[in-house]
Image 1 (cartoon, helix red, strand yellow):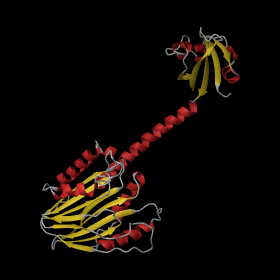
Image 2 (cartoon, helix red, strand yellow; image 1 turned 135 degrees about the vertical axis):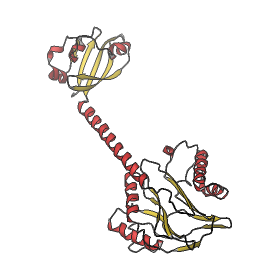
Image 3 (tube, helix red, strand yellow; image 1 turned 180 degrees about the vertical axis):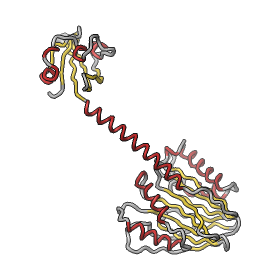
Length: 350
């Protein structure tokens, strides 16, 4: 055996050592006290043999001999009458394993710190509410992991146009967060056509030669504040944004392939809708719909729209009300319990 094995009598004397242990420590320890093998002059404070083994129970502990670490399994040795007369200890060296474990812990801590820095960076990229007269905008962003795969942005294009989009990228974690950073930096924020901006983004994405399993779904709109119209285009987002008001309710349906390398030439189109004072534009990803309760029922569109259409609160409060309702529905206590990112944005035109 490569493991060390020794037998200790009731007086703590070493009465047997196997070859591996004799070669490792020398013959001098046979007949000595068990603790002398460990370089000590008195019994160990916690002696598993005295504590339990001589009472008939096996025990395990970690022990150090010099600069080496061992996992020690101690078991009772019985005579023909069933009496425990000795303890057999098997010492398996774990020095290297413990070193590797410590290195792994240090590496995990380093990675955790780096992920935390990446999370702060990603959140810093989210927009602050824009200071635009006649516009009230709020967003709610809750990643299911430290790094999320959803993203929202709103920005001025010129004096009369603002761009706003919501996106859901494939996967979660570091890979997904890198795609959101790519998205924010690659979107052309000067174009006044959402479909052209998505087409440019598609070709820019394909220059990177990313894996086919990586893609971005995105709904992009451009609002003309002067004539109160909104152009919009969709790159595969699987939920329907909605514009609603006193006399209006319209789901913004528009087909379009995700930003991906699945096709050589995408086809994106612009839709158009007129806006009136008091109209609201709601965007979201599927994470909020797919929250499930203990009966596997989804929160769903009906519950979401019921809150959305029957509230006169400001955008920020409405988003919080939707979140609170979904959490109560599924008995969720915090975002740590989410299985998918939850992202919503609500814009009100005054």
